[in-house]
Image (tube, rainbow, N blue to C red; front, side):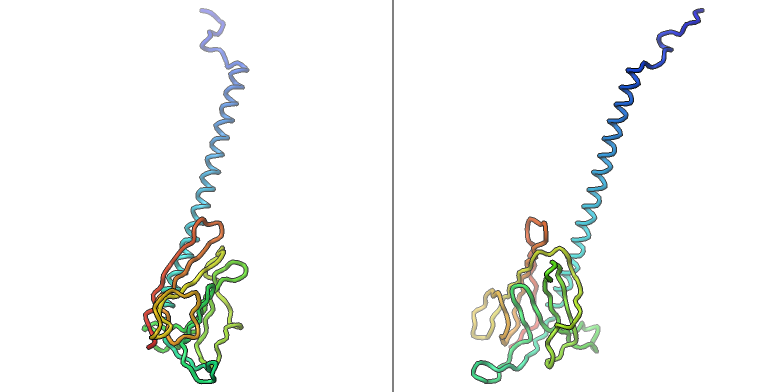
Length: 207
C-alpha cells in the first residue's frame, strides 16, 4: 500500500483558495446590496403608506367639515351703506374659512369656525374655535398640522352666488348670500408628479 496521498486526497492549492475567497466576497457583496435594496424599498413603501394614510385622513376631515357647513348669515354694510345679508363663508384660491355645525351625536356642542390653509413651510393646517359673529378672527387660535410636504393647494367653488346668478366655478367665494354647492381641492405634494383632486359636497344651502 502506498504511503503517499492520492490526487483525490490532496489539499486545495493557493489558486483554488483565492478563487473561493473571491467568489464568497462577490456573493457577500450581492447579498449586502440585496438587503440594502430591500430595506430602502421597505422604508420608501412605509413612507408612502404613511403619507397616503395622512392624506386620506385629511380628506375625510375636510369632507366631514364641509358637508356640515352651516348656512349662518351675517349682516354687512354694502358700498351704499345699506345692511346686506352674507353667508359666513370665505373662500379664496388657497384658503377656506366657514362655519361647521356639530355632529348630531353631539347636540350640545356649538357651531365651529373652521379654516384650512397651507403654511409657509408647506404644511396643510387647520384652525377652529367656537363660532361667534362678534369675533371672526382666528389669528390667535393655535393651528393643527394635517399634512406635511404640501407644495400648494388650489381651491375652486361651484354654485350660484345669488338666486339670479348662473351656476359656475369661481376662484373666490366671499360676500355672497349663499353657500357654494361644491368645493374642489387640488393638492400638489412635494416631489409628486401629479396633483391630487377632490370634490366635496356642501349639503346646506341658504335661500
